Length: 547
Image 1 (cartoon, one colour):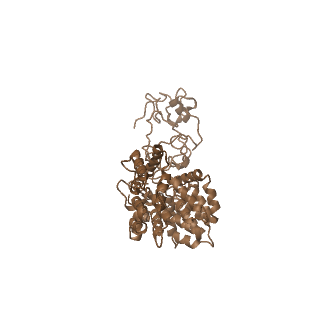
Image 2 (cartoon, rainbow, N blue to C red):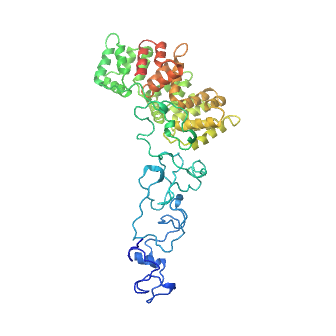
């Protein structure tokens, strides 16, 4: 290995200059004797001064050992966050200044295991801050760090309190498992698929996407679960009409209701085969062309349940939800089942749109009406759901799921009486995917399934509401399939429930509801509808179901 010439790097040490001692400044003398002319053994400061040409020999102000701004070999201890070089180096390097202008700059080293998909990772000025979460890791934990730049491969030291379980220090760290973190899964964690995890690959509708099942992973389950284990794929039956012509549609509708008699088939052909966005355009263009309100014309020309279904189709989704909520609380008594169905099955955006539409349509706050119409813990549950504050689209944190399952167990089966607030807090605030993980962990912890535990611990509307949330989170399609089945089972038909579910779900997930209905009851949903209702009402419902 050769050294750069004097002046651009470090002077060679231990070798006499040509022609005897004292031939050049900075060369050590045998036995420590000074050379003629006063040249002696250089100090670190004098050597650095010779290299940099600055008073004192340092190109920057001295830094506290191990503090922000530490450069090079991690002088004085490890860098913040446990990163940088391990503590195998001495606390100071007496012969070397903090930087070597004569040597090429050190290259950047990539991270281990594919975390954050970064091609290179350079330490920021002032040291490392909190680690940035990467893809494929558990929420509330940090990715393993490299053992050092250019040092041995693998995973370096854990953070101060370890890694994984919540509670040990801010950020949710605890002691690591024996043997450290271990190797990442085969192939690394990598980046997520384009578009996230909410939809399956093109053309794939079966398997784990079709409905919720037990998480896969065998013995490795619980370390880094795949988000797809807790995702559900959805598809509606009613799609936007490909050859949509709004002017032509309004002319057909006007002709169908003008004069003597009504052409119900023409109305069904349009309203039953246009998306909600297209129907809103039709409603606007109808008034623009004819100066008449389409909904009022439908009410005057139609009747019975067929009229109810057509009017429902002409509302926006948030308006229809607000209309059904108001109807459930208006008059004598309250339709708790309808309140639970709507408030406990809508996502945050839908809840926010619903509350805004309710205020616009009725000049009242939804929360105030819920408080006046309900009571007790059931009131608290509905108010919690009406806020729309669920933590959606969060990564599944298995450690947190285990903690929450333990809390539910302690709040119910392990105590005399029930702490309903704990159930309310977890079921109303966690994402659907996280709740599914909690339910799985509860089943491992207790001898009862979470649904049986709720039945044992609660009663009345509160039990119904909690069970609705659990069943809907576990299998939304199964929940709606059950609601449709019981709306038609036995004597008579609950038409309000039948219309509400079919109209509100036909563009969301009716395909999965229809498949789940067939699986659960051994008979197609369309066959049930055909045998339970009749006339134009039946024709319209079948059009929405079949698509």
